[in-house]
Image (cartoon, rainbow, N blue to C red; front, side, top):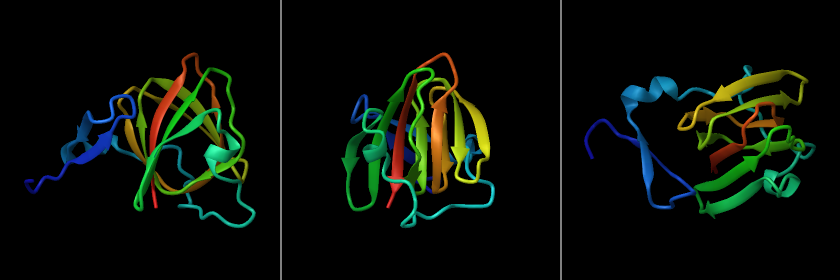
Length: 143
């Protein structure tokens, strides 16, 4: 591998095909709806694991000692329960519009294009599909 390392993300849909984000394109890789004051930590009073709180939307793709990969799918108007994510990389598999509401009541709306890749600092939120299309996401949670 040369000095310009690429970040590899595996698509749950193709399990084996991969998309590369070259460092020169990292300007597109930005925090996705992260709380502006930095990352949050899970605490005893934090909402739980999204697979538990919203098992109808989050599915485990794979897990090892370093990462957990989740596939997320919902439809327009769908809303999650409060849940927590550790530091993650989000890969949008479809175009969608979403609102995240954080524990302090702040809400952020964001539109994604298919193929967008973003770093997401640890956070607790409620997510809502406020667009007209299904949401399809691959989320790589860092342990």
